[in-house]
Length: 268
Figure 1 (tube, helix red, strand yellow):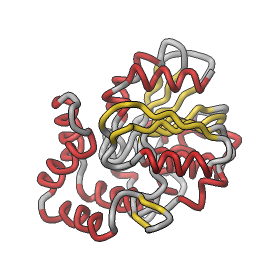
Figure 2 (cartoon, helix red, strand yellow):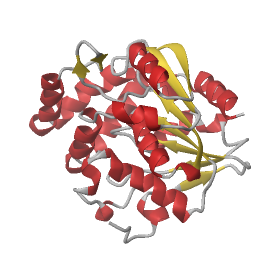
Figure 3 (spheres, one colour):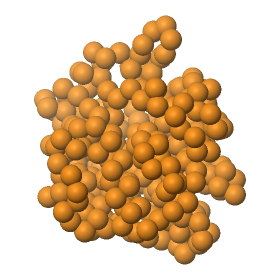
């Protein structure tokens, strides 16, 4: 499906800074580009930073939503490619949080000429357990129950998920911000994205990713363990793994100074 809207308006694209190198920051499930505001001040003095919202998230154009397109991560990857094409971007350093790491991988494998490097913050190629060879962290029944909770009690779902994602010992205001973000997303758009996120299995794609890849994992993450990062690092041909001694799945919000330092070193 060709975008029928202006892509910049459709994806609420905003551009910050004016450096020679382009960094694109891609938000995770249930979030929008505002979640990058903690990291942005560390990057926009040196780089041209592209922020956006996936269709169905944040301040995107909801009239552009296509249920079939956004039922898989490939649809979200197409958003990324559309933006790059619209802005004539090349040598893009793509930084994805959580599921956006995999979305970036889809985009980079499809159009490797657009990207120069890929940085993944708290990624997971598959949240499901396939014992004994792979432990994604969740049994299928548990994830199905979590998705079903979105139908039964959407606010209760957000109340449960936000602290799990943000992790203990972090600022309560950040957990509240994440909860508010979850609640403000219409379930009509959030549920297909949740299914695409939590039931995807992109393990077979890891070996096809040829770009230099940085994996930044949180030491205490309820969604993506360090073992998942180690697994990815073994399979992605040109990758490096950095483990941050922190709690939670949102290192760009809880530990922006450390994350920016790791990313800047990787970029340079």
